[in-house]
Image 1 (cartoon, helix red, strand yellow):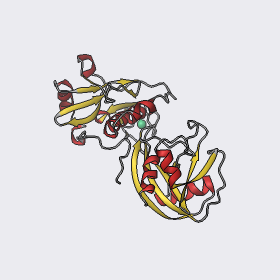
Image 2: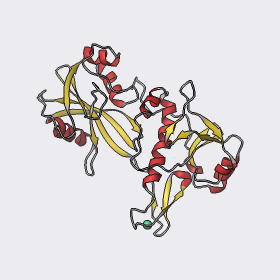
Image 3: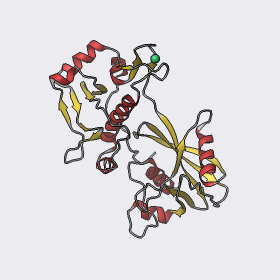
Image 4: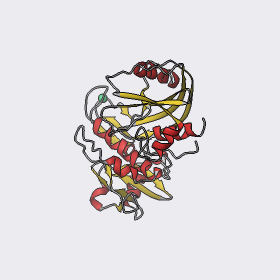
Length: 289
Ligand SMILES: [Zn+2]
């Protein structure tokens, strides 16, 4: 992949082997090099250059549930674990992400996905009893049945269908005005990535596809998806749209995609943002792939 992918490239060493070492974790939280990610709810707080803000850990914060994000060199980096109101999601966060380098967004995305997961997993899915924080934030354990739970990642396929020098894009009703993006859907139990791509294109657009190729992937922290970018060849350009999920679809050629990615006012659609893998897939397709 010759193009940057959103939410990737974190420079932190996740140092998984330290997560279960409670003594080492307490030592690290107490060290002068320890830093805590500054958040507003679960949203990033940025400096003027669009970089994440970090602060030294205060005494009172050292004893609380801290998410161990990893090591920057030898310096431990933590995130707080705030309570989130159910359903709380401010669209304004996308304006902040647009200012961030992918590697900075990657660090925040890790924290955000973990925070959401902890907030949604206070109770054991096995027996219903309360769960407790463990593994420095990379798990929860049931206090009653001792079942261990780990942060989940949900695979989502997102794909461009190609036909006659054009690709298919669609829009959901809640998108900003003019925005079109690649079709996407969750991978279901019992299917491969390729089968999920073929099923989603058939369900959402009545397309038959072949030659499905994996292109690249990226995390998407809303709340914890892994976006798996693919390209496929469609057998025709006849689309029957699933209007329960999508309100419009368009086939666009390379000039139209180039105009949209350049932000040209004459473009027939508004491109997905730079940090979304749909944007990267379009760049990849423009390369002639
Ligand atoms: Zn349990």
